[in-house]
Length: 227
Image (tube, rainbow, N blue to C red; front, top):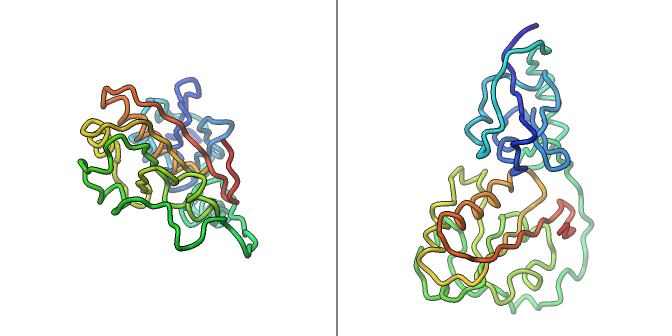
């Protein structure tokens, strides 16, 4: 049948993953760094993903397509059981380890409080000449050695754009603009919804007008550092 359905321009797609996170049906997945409509039957054609795309790579077109199937969507989402409902990701059970970090529990690398992006003040003494770590909430749970590998000698702020449902970029821009930040490290999960955090940091850096170096580290759902 001819009906409305999502169309993705892969040349415009910047791989941020925000459309995949916004798609409640799981019709969009990230494949080789690009957003793809994985099955016509998963797309209801309503376009919840359109406003989430910062690159204007998504549009609604009319073409021959299979009917939208709510039952197919339910089965598809049931097969992707990560708590954040990220489409196309596979939950993994990680075996318990007796020793997960060489830092004693009494020696946390956290150097300030609060840590949530929504709660941290824009201006604070500990932001002066800070090496800033912006981390997705889940990363510290996925990576057993998170404190030593990423938090040591850094100011740490954390958030989840899917759970908070906010655009962090304005708050992050203010922090970068009002303080002397030396560099920024983003640590995110491999799941698509974390693309929103990475994109917010990049947007904030550009808007701040400051030449601050940025590095991005991705953690897999089984705790491996992917780069």
